[in-house]
Length: 314
Picture 1 (cartoon, rainbow, N blue to C red):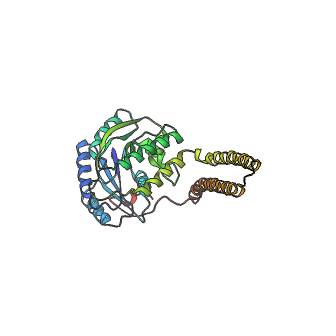
Picture 2: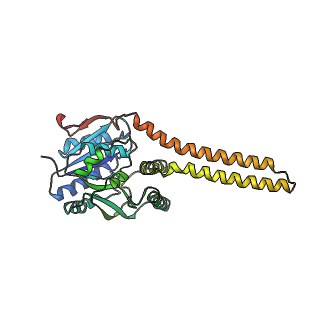
Picture 3: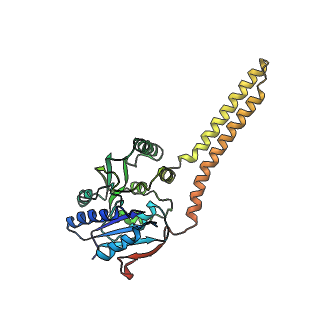
């Protein structure tokens, strides 16, 4: 008999948190009184996380562990958990305990009442810098402006999704994964659940600025074609600026002033900037096409724990 709930927990170098994460998740899921499974996805951790996860699997029959052959990133780790989950509902939660497991029963209650996606909407963000809060707000506003208002603000990957929704996401083949956008795009009945986000239980964030910018770029390019039009507008602006400079040069020539070299440098610089911007935008989209057409699998599972041989998916 399949579990009612599958909880997917991506893990990367979480040796300091994993014990407390498992304790709190187990307490919450047992308190709900229904069958469940905990799927820990080891995303190529370099610390003691793999050994600790194997210990959990040996001591708890509800634990399943997927060990990646190499680090593939948070979004791919969550995707792998969705591939292996067999519950009627799937919960996605990080191992750092910033998203409190104690919110899961409220999500489950909304699901039983008819919601097919219940996503956590952050009411407060304890332990995060003002810079991160401001940039997050600015990003979500930009995303909604470029790609449409289907994306809720102040949300992450913490959510509960119905089996039907999970199966639709599993069937989406793109490699550049932006799951919160994908869940928003598929539709179905979705509800927000307000909660207060905690600070990390231990260690440092695994999403520094560089990774956040990469994820933001995935979100914009996965759900909007508008950046492809930016080179057109840049080209039109360049034509207008070139015409204006030509008029200025003509006026200066009539006035007997020599400004040809200055105007030449300005035109060349402007043209080069526009061309490089256009090439950069087009190159970013072509890189995504290149990545998709290779057809490589999203991840490779080196080994599993907690699964019977016939139960493990490829």
